[in-house]
Image 1 (cartoon, rainbow, N blue to C red):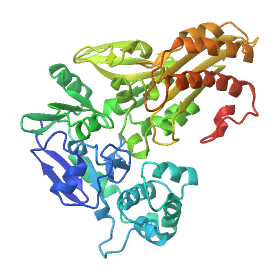
Image 2 (image 1 turned 90 degrees about the vertical axis):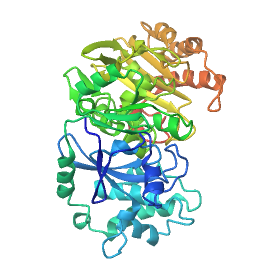
Image 3 (image 1 turned 180 degrees about the vertical axis):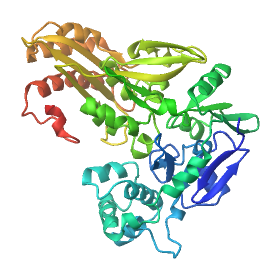
Image 4 (image 1 turned 60 degrees about the vertical axis):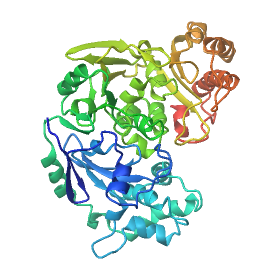
Length: 491
């Protein structure tokens, strides 16, 4: 066990022995370090006022910079990383970084409260990408809210910063020295830090992780803390033992198994998006709408599954595609279909000390078509009212040879529409048959009413998504995508 947390704050090595396991990066910066440029707004990872940039090493040893929400990120998760705040951006001579100067030039700030968060999101974009297009800029800024300036000047600043600076000559461009410093911090020891009898455990290997969880089955597993962080900031829960996945490289890999992708439970949305989208473009578009950039940089598909939320966005798509999960307890492993993992609201088929190790996503078969639809009040950074996913295969005569339809937001768990599937399999793929199946779909679920949507709305929308699937797979001229990649409708 290593009993000290080690990370770089800018270029300064910090080593901390006693730390509350759920102390957030935001509170440490503001209350301990008095670095008040990082702001607290929502304290739940939505507004982006707390955005900072974290540098970490990829599995290949390359340095990656990511914008993250400091308000729900636990300080101890920074072990082996570099933390950059708005205070680090000005040069030694006091000159503003191009991301800052562009905000000045384009009048991108009024009250200024949101400005440091926007600057850090722009800074991360500047470090990682050269002159992105409008859609990419919008995605990068979707996790930052402004209530007085409006977004157009800030979008202009995103373009302007590339005119002001030379990315190759930027003082953050030479990553070799920082990568070497972070590599020197890496070890195979399990990190164990804490305070007042509470512990933060961060094993370095999957075997360490399995042994620790078997010995501490009541521990709270944390990956990106995009949900658990709110337990602390909003519900004031005190977590006795936190078990962190982020240092376990085996959990952070995507492996091509030939007939399937094996996605480690600790793979972030950002890292999973490209390999999944290469197989299923609509799934990639769905991931693009999960949270915002700061959330996708740290949130994991494994966490989305283990959380068991009935409105999680990835489970309906995975269930429709016939995905399985591998569970592990100690050295014992078992594989089960994902749809069988969810038993009831808040209840999963998972024994004490057992954790989700990997997701097994089958590759598409010839003739299969996949569609995923998320219905929410906003395109970006919103929770689904209904999420529907469909895998359809027609035979040579145009009959439904196979159909898997799965929904989120319609029951206490993500669930297949079994009556709908049965009503269509073996029949011609025609509008009349689809409309008849829409009636069956309304009988598959008894949704609840809440502040996102009424039960009647959910039932109507879910049935209409089946009709949308029919339109997209039969009418190449139909324009069904108002936002996002319209080309997917004709794939």
